[in-house]
Amino acid sequence: MNVFWSRGYHGTALPDLLRATKLSRGSLYAAFGGKHALFLRALDRYIADALARIDVELAPRHTPVDGLRAYLAGYVNRTSGAGGRRGCLLVATAMELAGHDGDVEARIRSFFKAMETKLAGAFARAKAAGELADGVEPTSAARILVCFVEGLRVTGKTGPTRAASQATADALLSRFIR
Image 1 (tube, helix red, strand yellow):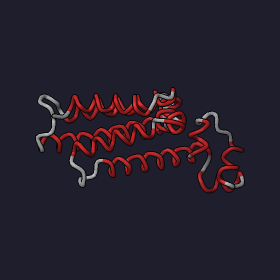
Image 2 (image 1 turned 90 degrees about the vertical axis):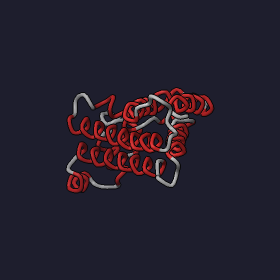
Image 3 (image 1 turned 180 degrees about the horizontal axis):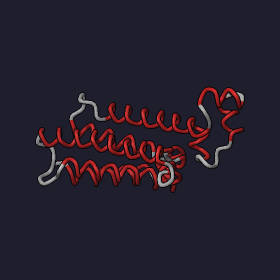
């Protein structure tokens, strides 16, 4: 996953994968079926990790608004400093392959939909708790937040300060809550 993340799919050569996995060419093909299949497994792992992290951030042990704050704070942290400059495997993959690779496109579409569904649930809980501003629709707010955090991933490559990113996240969230 780290090799693909650092170099991109097309920038990753078989020798890079052999070094990273410590497998011979034959063993890599026997275990994974080739570069594309290995890449899809790495992407699946990245997505599973991201969805698990979102579940923790939005966990019911938090109030809905505190969960949304934790979710945004996590993205601010991941998009700041050296980690932010590294970027996001999912965003990089979307830009490189989604329009050309149906398997990749389906995975990315599914991830964004799952993220949106989780966020819509948090916004619906906030609405039920009376914490959502009047006129805010949970599904639309969730879609906006998905676009926002993925935009943070892109702008994180340019090195914005953590404070600036957090201020922007706070300003956006304040539009949704009471």
